[in-house]
Amino acid sequence: VPAGHGFFSEGEPADYVYILVSGSVRMSKLLSDGRRQVTGFLTDGDILGFEYRDQHSYSAEALSEVEVCRFDAEEFEALRQRFQGLEHCLLSRISADLVQAQEQMLLLGRKTPLEKLASFLLRLRKRQRALNSGSQMVRLPMTRADIADYLGLTIETVSRSFTFLRKAGVIDLPEPSLVRIRDRERLEKMAA
Amino acid sequence: VPAGHGFFSEGEPADYVYILVSGSVRMSKLLSDGRRQVTGFLTDGDILGFEYRDQHSYSAEALSEVEVCRFDAEEFEALRQRFQGLEHCLLSRISADLVQAQEQMLLLGRKTPLEKLASFLLRLRKRQRALNSGSQMVRLPMTRADIADYLGLTIETVSRSFTFLRKAGVIDLPEPSLVRIRDRERLEKMAA
DNA sequence: CGATCACTTGAACACAGTCAACTAAGGTGG
DNA sequence: CCACCTTAGTTGACTGTGTTCAAGTGATCG
Image (cartoon, rainbow over all chains, first blue to last red; front, top):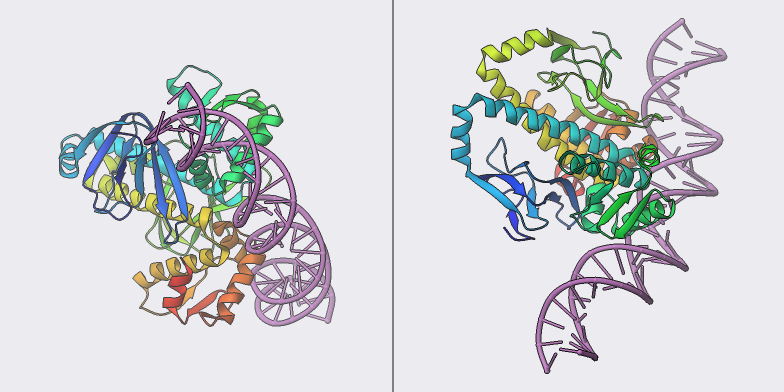
């Protein structure tokens, strides 16, 4: 699937379930006047499009070229019936998503722009560290606009916050979408 | 259980699962400097304290006198093993919570104070309408501070937004914790 | 009664948003 | 190959909205 591809939109019938093999996906919700909230990013190994109802509650688009494994919703349903392990696995995953969502509510409702960005970078690092070696490099597969809509800010404020962290010597920005964490301790303090 | 009782706090071991019979409960997360985010309110029939890990990810306190049905975590685990229906039911509930959480992210990240309060009142009404008759009266079992920490605002802004809605003729406030919705259509428009 | 608590209201301020200009990189077509 | 356009990102100046600080009201309770 090519970059920019839309998997499904908010309110559409949930006909397929996808498992991500490679690449990144953005989930988002829209307000009628165009304001957007990004509810999360998915990467390798994540499940996309599973809903416990007939409609999707968010939209999903590919941030880059993405490899996925697609199932029909009924097919997936059948798999769940046959293997109790899958049911268990789904519950575990959704629970983790819920904990993550609560963390995000705290971020959106109560953190300052700097704290938001610091938390975001640390969260990305933790994710990528799991796969990649323990490098201090963090890739940003999403644009500033995506980050802004994820953190409840504007792109300008996101950009200024990056600049602040860079000038403070906490991070480096060899390219706009590549972050090198220079002082993790301080970054963690700033994440509040 | 009396009003104000704390069921458990963030980070504590998840030893019990509760099912609410009557009363209201507040779930919240705290930042080290005291900033608080309320992640949700629970009422009759809701499940409290079920975690897919050994630690709670949030705190829970009673807003009023509350009747609960308490289970040991292991006991609850055993019930899940025996009745597949329960597993199914849990998955369904947590999925709904996740959809709700995504809705809340949109609210926290992208809505104005007025839109936040309007959305909040409509959500409460929907909840209470399910049980109660189709009355236009909405009870607020929580304080302004709780509402503020739920919507990512200050108590002053919440109070001003209530006043605005009242002066606009959209709601009435016979008492501070009792709202009468006078113009639901307009309230829905304001919720964005 | 006086004290406390929840809520409301007003005035001033500050922080993030808006608007605008600018840079750099990538892509297209003559 | 270069001129041109588009897009992503950064930076600056100004504004406005929600916060902060402060005062005031009304209800409840000892």
